[in-house]
Image (cartoon, rainbow, N blue to C red):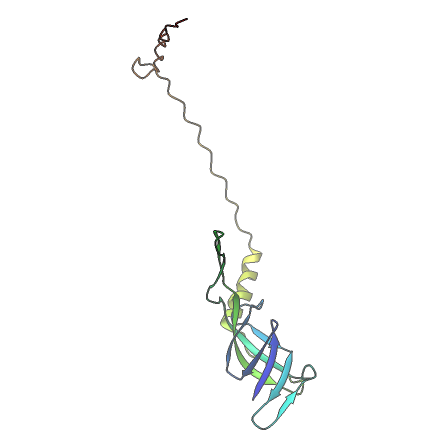
Length: 172
């Protein structure tokens, strides 16, 4: 069985146990996601096309990883003008493993929490009850005193007086 889903402004053809690279979703690794914009559901014999979506159909998946695509270089240039610009871009993406394709209004089966859900959900609550101890700011050291030159050698010498300018003879 396969389905065509719409997410992030794009359409994807998915089947059970597929790993799909889609636009970034706000979900943690290991959490479950559901796609309700199912445009088409079918298998080799029959297909159901939605107008615009198939009523009661949904696709369930699990977030495997939040990552970024490879870098794309954008280079602009104008000939004979000395104008060149180089920019790079990496798109944020989410890897989702499709677990179920559901029709007729069925809901995805709720299973036990994954290890990632337990780490993300239970640990912050225990830490939130116990306030962190405040640390005192480190004491500032007094500024070092400047040394005063007392030796004749280390004292600044005065510049010698300038010699008078040479006299010139004017012929009149």
